[in-house]
Length: 187
Image (cartoon, rainbow, N blue to C red; front, side, top):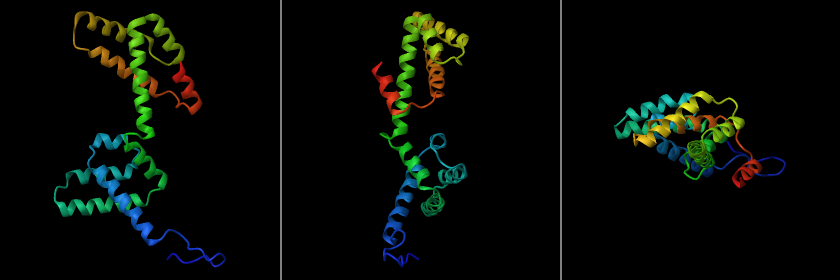
């Protein structure tokens, strides 16, 4: 029960109307999450104990049963911290911070790939200076194969593999703060 503060006379906690709005927001979030595939859900910061419930939701086709499962998952999610729910919403937004970081990572990997294919060993040395843990031999082989594919007009298997390798390598670096990100964009 909400009640009032004896000293100030203010109401304690959110109103029932606010609690209902919050519950409906979580219900809408679960409905959105229910449309995602298992691989998409694994990329989101969902608590591990909820993933089997979403798998059940994907299997259920009857309207009433699906509605009950959505309500069940929403009840479980309301028990989570607000930070967890905010992180899930942010990851789902196309313009959210997580999406911007992922897009920036893809652009950096694409830039490095083009730089490596154009400049060869000089670009590889620069990359290895920034990322000393990178596998020089594998990167050199992928660059050589990608150039060979391009010259022989073959399908771009090594070209794509080089991109995946760069994305993984750049994804393991520490996230940039606002000042470092601005400096990097000015380069």
